[in-house]
Image (tube, rainbow, N blue to C red; front, side, top):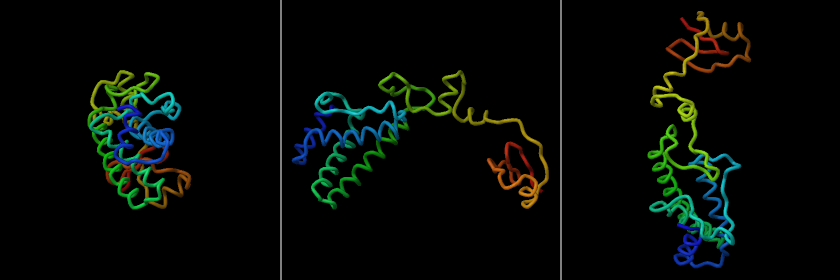
Length: 193
């Protein structure tokens, strides 16, 4: 649906005195959330709208998830009118619809395939380290890629809790734990007793 269609629908459902420009700013809030949290756009790639220029632009979410926009606008209208109980109810609906959309999106778009959305500059979105590996030639599933993330083991020594800190100082950092009694500190692997 377009920006104008969403605003007209909400105006029909919930008559109000707020201008189209104010409602566009509220819709920009939702679009920014979608772009940042779901599509993982970089901040400089986030798209916002100006009603006087963009009223006929298609918003990112289409049916059946356009309720995300409708409930958010209704919530903002209620907040603007000082109807805080109604605002709270609308926000509960919005959150439910938004979570449903996020779940649907992440269930249908694999981050490694780039098979889905692209931002306004044509760059793929929903990028992960796995997606970068695929883009650079990795062949295999996410699980296979995770299993491939192994470095060379460091020296293995028997340690006690106090000895670790006495030997390496408190600035050393435990970065991973392997089998019971093993840990990785400062890039080296250690085995306990």
